[in-house]
Image 1 (cartoon, rainbow, N blue to C red):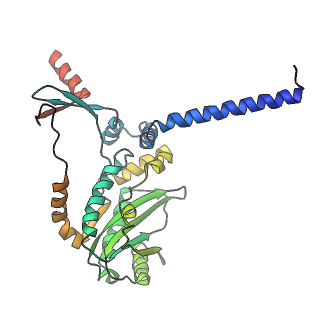
Image 2: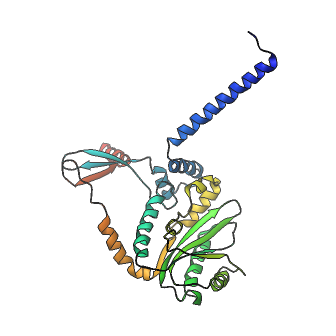
Image 3: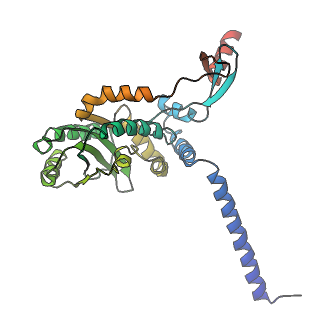
Length: 297
């Protein structure tokens, strides 16, 4: 049985579309087998490695690839783990930093009754530098000492950096223990700090504990970093190196030692081998190769 030419063309188109859809579903399914954070890590690495071969980036390159071997000194049993760089901009390691902050803030929040979530922003700018970030942090510290913050009993502040194609944007999330803030005064004081006639600030009463996700946000999301051009990623990691983006003050700073002591009690016990011993040796493949080379010289 034969079909008219136009009917055959439609059948061919349907087959092509069906096969394309099948391929798309297969590709999506394959991508879902790899965690998103690992995909972002590899994307950033491929863009960054040709531009920056510093020790920091070398450690980022090892993250999730280099194996660490834990050997029991008593029975010789070996367990394998992957090295983690613990860099604040690494998509695979950011959650560790966030979880520590959440634990700290969670314990402190139980001790206060009037938490407020304040957001301070400033205008975008074209080039991100170490000096520009330090300047922003100085502005944050000076704002804490202005009259509009005089009734704040304590709190913490976390800085976030974004770039959505219109330049770099620095803004800060504050968690404050204060009954009330005059937002007109805060806006005016912050505007003076950053050299603007007007600066966008907003505040929310967060006794419903919804602030945790905002206050403990990543410095920059792995998905966003991975979307930047290589030069922009390099500019970002060079600018942020050696800078802390989370700080506490007032009552929270005073309570920090007590809170950390409470968190220490919640830490899981050290690993125990199946043989009952807790004495281990940790090695990497690179270290073993270097050790073997030194023996053969």
